[in-house]
Structures are given as C-alpha cells and as structure tokens.
Image (tube, rainbow, N blue to C red; front, side):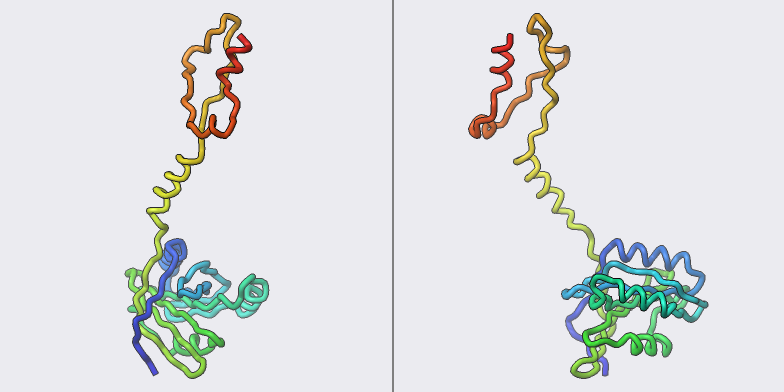
Length: 203
C-alpha cells in the first residue's frame, strides 16, 4: 500500500555533500546508513565495508552489527541511502528487498540518488500495519544564515575587546601609537577599576 501525504524528508547539508562525493567516486552503486531525528532530519551518514557492482550493493553484516552495537543511539539509525550510479532513480526489486530487510518497529527513511544529482525519497512504516509514503520532497537543511547576525549582536553587547595597556615611560608619555580605549558605561556602573586613575596616581 502506497500513500502520499503532506510529508517531507530533510537532510543536513554536510550529510548531503558526503553522499554526493561518494556518488561521484563510485563507479556503480554504493550505500550507507544515517540517523533520523523525530522531525525527520537525516544526518550522520556512515559508510561501511561493502561489495558493489554497477547494479548492486551489499553491506558487510559484521561491520553493520558492530556499528549498531557501539552506536550511542542505535534507535536513531533509521535511514538507508544508496546510489544508482548513472541509472535513473527508482525502487528496484533489490531495493524493495533491502528496505524490507531493514524493517524496524518505527520507520525507515530511504533515499536513492544518481550521478545526475537526481533523487527519490520515501518513508516506510510497519506498525501497526505497513505503509509507504513515496515520492516525498527532499530538502537540504542549510546552516541558519541569520544566526551569525544574532550572535554578532550578542557578542557586541557583552564582549569588550581592548588592547593591552602598556605602562608609560618615566616622563609619563604613552607608547607611540597607543590610543586610549573607550569603555562602555556598564564597566564603571559595575565598579570596575579605573585604569586611567591608577596610572595617574602612579605618575
């Protein structure tokens, strides 16, 4: 049973870039696994020992089992990604068998790509009964570009960067090129020591 709903799959930009690199490097197919968050974001792709041809890929089961046993959150490993090389993106009979073999008690996100930068994405759910949501939109989750502006605003509001204060010479002259640094008002309001007064006393 295949059902289309208003669902989407998102993938971290870093994970997508790794997949494209591996797709370019592979003469034929390759496959990898990844984690999936509750809001269906794919990330943390992992490449395993495998034997691949132009039309198939077979993961090393020992390496896969070791990875799942040692993973901090094995329940999050819910995505299977593979390439069809130069072929079109579709779900072959072998793909369907692999997806069925990766069945779990939650869901599985499957993504197939090719060298032409095409893709297909689907979500399979097995409980309480089998459902497949196919031809889902695949969106790349880019870093939040507005975050830099927010961080810069907070940094400027809370961080004061000053040049090191060099001691005047015996005549009381400042070292050449050193300028007095303005201080924000909150430094005096919070009882910070007045360095200029200290230097004046020393002179």
